[in-house]
Length: 162
Image 1 (cartoon, helix red, strand yellow):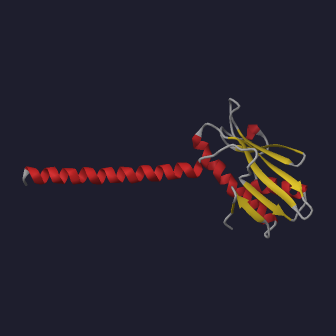
Image 2 (cartoon, rainbow, N blue to C red; image 1 turned 60 degrees about the horizontal axis):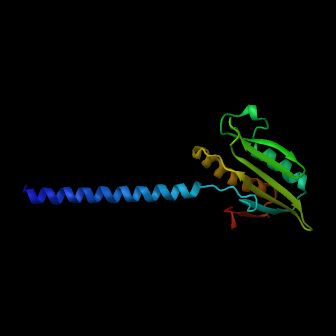
Image 3 (cartoon, rainbow, N blue to C red; image 1 turned 90 degrees about the vertical axis):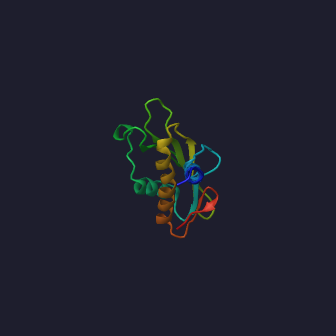
């Protein structure tokens, strides 16, 4: 094999390796965007209009999420029901320095139904916890659908997949 052929082969291998690395980087960035979270107390991540009372919505949500209700019952980063106040169910993750996940589900009555909205109030800095928070979106949407199969469930402004 001539030197020129070896150089061409080496260049071809390097080009292929560069292309593979580029594709891997794009895929990784795409996945990071999927789990990127933002705290926004004004924009619900999940919302639904259901034909049920406020208390019924909150009780059903708490039961179907089946989350522990005591901080001491969870490990670092795990989500638990932090309590409820009026028509609001509070969710949090265990954090030893007080900078964990915080969210709430707010329910209010309209003329025709109850509207439930899930808001993220604080996102933890530990990005390894983000996938479980993103999965919570779908669990909440599933809970709303199981209470009222006719409910229009929206996720971040788009209809949730049934």
